[in-house]
Image (cartoon, rainbow, N blue to C red):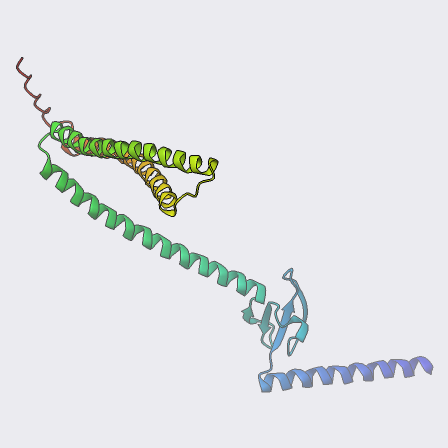
Length: 236
């Protein structure tokens, strides 16, 4: 008798659960309800329901219809941020590439103009050498003038320094004019010295500039260009 009652109770419970599930499925079908599954950081589904729990709001999800077919997926907040960073990096790379291409076009335009001016200015390589030598002569004269001025300033500075030291040894008052003159003269000496260094660097740059100019001139003429005519020997 007890066993029959248990069997009857189990059957009744099964019928009740089946009815509840069927009713729930029908209600979801009529209301268009969705089923959402959410994933952990490793991308593994850890739960499903009608809404995502608060602690998984930033996780990846997929939405299923009543038949279990996936209708929509979303990335996690971390994946979206990573994708956005990738899109931004790609945009910057494209922008940089476009800028490089514009710079190359601009440089090519400048090079064409410089090449045209070079061919229009010189008839042969010898003329380039002559122009270089004239420019170097100008710089050499400037260096010579600066060296003379520096020597004069150095001698004057040494003289003033000696007069000031002599006055200090004899405990005689040194005039402010003498002190100011010593400072000014030493400042001039340093300025001339820096000018010599700058002009020496300019001379080196001039040599390199004309060497590059001459090399470019050869490239523009090409191997088929006639050799430059040698300058006539000077009469003795």
